[in-house]
Amino acid sequence: MTTAKRIHSLWYRYGHKWVVLAILVELPYTSRPMALPLLLALYRDQKTNSNEGRRHRTPAQVMCGLLSLLMHWFPERKFAFAGDNTYGSHEMARFAYRHRKRLTLVSKIVRDANFYEPPPQRIGKVCGRPRVNGAPLPSPEEVVSQTQIRKRIKVRWYGGGWRNVEVVSGASHWFKSGKGLVPIRWVFVRDLDGTHRDEYFFSTDTKMSVSEVIEMYGGRWNVETTFQEMRAHLGLETTRGWHRNTVLRMAPSLFALYTIVIVVYDTMPRTSRYLQTRQWGGENCVTFSDMIISVRHYLWINWVFERTPNGADVQKLSKPIRKLLHFGLTQAA
Image 1: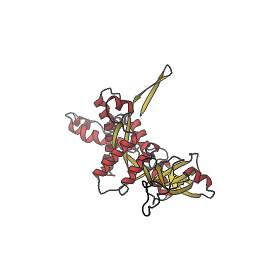
Image 2 (image 1 turned 120 degrees about the horizontal axis):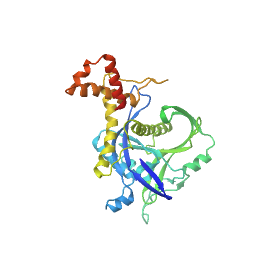
Image 3 (image 1 turned 45 degrees about the horizontal axis):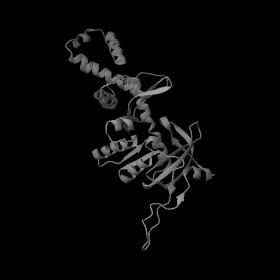
């Protein structure tokens, strides 16, 4: 969430970058899982942290903190986290591997990642420190170029559709100097139906199937839809605040409001007269715009009109006028 303007060939950037952890919830009346924001933290760049005397943390390190908090809140649950290439780092993979009993990471991996065999077992007395890795292995790109026969499967793609893809996969140990080895399963994906570029994914759970890795990463796209819906209906990225407390309150409140609207809508009876679904050509599911209109309608009737001194006067209006008034208020709010 960063904007920029150009003045005399110099770029002046302003805005804020939020690291958002959302949960995917499948609802029976929507065409795709809904990504509900649960935790978020403001990312500060290295220059700002240095000026304020704060230790700098990358977005991946910030996300590790949010995941740690989530696992602390729900010690009996196991989580699978899907993130874009910002979180496809060796550091993030190592964090997930340390918590492998409760956390799995799925993300993108660089095509020339350093793969090695595990270190050989030490037998008897051997001088020197123990080795941290074994013999080098081909990178994902090298394996793909040497594979002539590739498997073709049909998987759920971005946005909930289906695609025929060509895949190559393998299990190896990802190495980074000074950080050690992390066992992963990597997957190369080539889209056979569309124009999507070739991708390399990985999972810290080596037992995951190829289709599970692809579909789990594809589910990450729902959080992008959440951001778009928040821009369209809640005014995300349109707020202006110069005070520190304003910045720290406004965006979290909007993210929380998005989740609250969906939760309130889901708790409303399906036969409720407040469920307002706008009819579009070919649409047979509920969208976030339908949800927020229904919740607004419910609040206007049950909270505003019934709890204000002059709210009873609205009931004196004719039914067509009341219906027109309710429609205008729910659309414009």
